[in-house]
Length: 229
Image 1: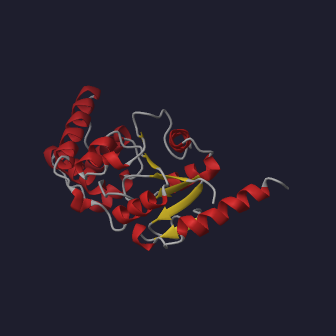
Image 2: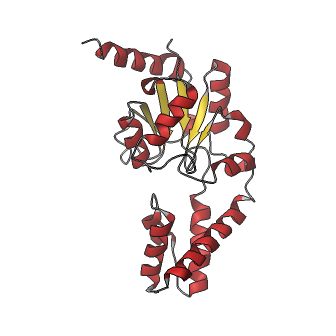
Image 3: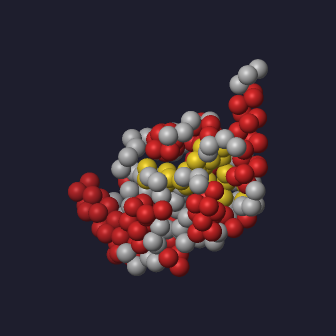
């Protein structure tokens, strides 16, 4: 069996913090005097905080000075952090804790590869921080997914070649980043949306018991054999 490592995205894979981003943006819209719905929130997924504010202001037909925009960006993040500080282990998504247990039993190391600058805090809140061999977050990278930087740094933390790393992702940009890094990509969520992934599962509870000992090992073997020809 080849030595392998695992890189997990955070939001939508280990925990679901998207709902807190929505509530924080909704708080801001309420303050500005217009309705911000969950359908509106779909427009903000995978978008930077600055661009998210611009979209939100367009929805409400509100114009602000640059100074006011900066104030509201800070305010939104403070509201978001208030929600995050209320998180607990009960918010870990199905199958995540069990999968980490399996990886520990197999002696497979894992790191986090997330765009969130609050990743360490979130992991601490759900009592998972000490379990990860390393964290690559928004403070560690200069390029956002689909650029593979976050995962390539993750491979370095695992002391492994990229092709020996398995990435669990719930976003199209994340799957693209894993594929560009020449890693094995596992899509968590809608299979049609994440159809570029090497493997797909609805959530982490669907991972078969022989996934790392057999399935992934065979995949890496094929990758290495293809390089010989």
